[in-house]
Image (tube, rainbow, N blue to C red; front, top):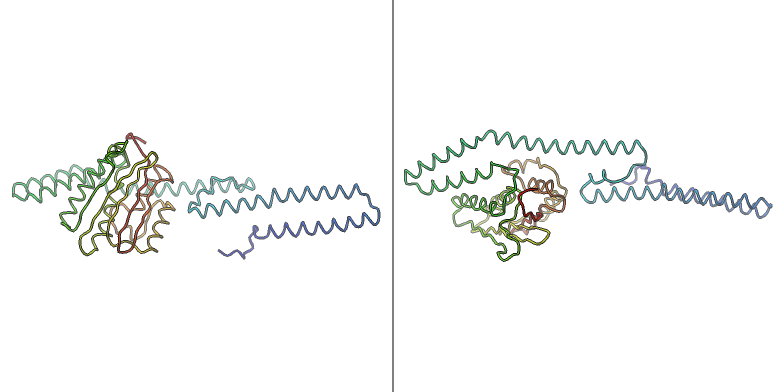
Length: 339
């Protein structure tokens, strides 16, 4: 950042020091004149008192307040959440307060406009796929496959129908972890027909926990997009077999889900860039790479979690090139199916 520009904040410190130094010199001269020429000592003390009051007032009202404003702005920028600045009391005039209020309102409108556009895009896609038509067609395919003795086709079609039914219906409702894992199992079966023994899935959670982990609630379609990314970006390009592990940990405050693959991993620069984007909580990712992936991008899953539960929750990724990737999802512990 170029700090050599003529910003007011850059001159306040120098101006304060110069003014106080100049005034101090004048006071010394006035003091000497008072002593030599017997000017009124009371007048000198009055001027000295006024000087001290003005100096302290200038420090408190101008210099210290300006430094505080700069510190708050810098902290907001460093936290990757510039919108936090709108929650601070930085108004130095009624006009500045009105400006901050207008910017905050415009920011929120822009944010939720993006949200509405994404929802509209999803609803348009959903409306194009008539669920009953889709399920009936898949059922017809399955029946024909059974009649022809093509059991593998029938099983795959039934699995695909179940997966679509779960994915399309009631997108906004909370589901149990058991429901999400069942959906992952259906998705894995579909992928297993393609990859065969190259792909292996394991699920690990504490069966002796005080809390019934499978009975906890979470937003729908949180795990499946991460599993999809792990398969297509980590395991599919890998030579040889690959393992995908889902590990679920629960404590009094957090539900933590690890989705781990032993695939290709990520370069450190790409990993750092992705984690910064997840930390920034960019509402929606419109870059070409994400659009070409298909499905719901990791960043959108992360943003959905943060919109629902706050900044403490979301996704963080650990990865080592040619070793594998661990996507860590942090959620609140929800005992009932309502927010």
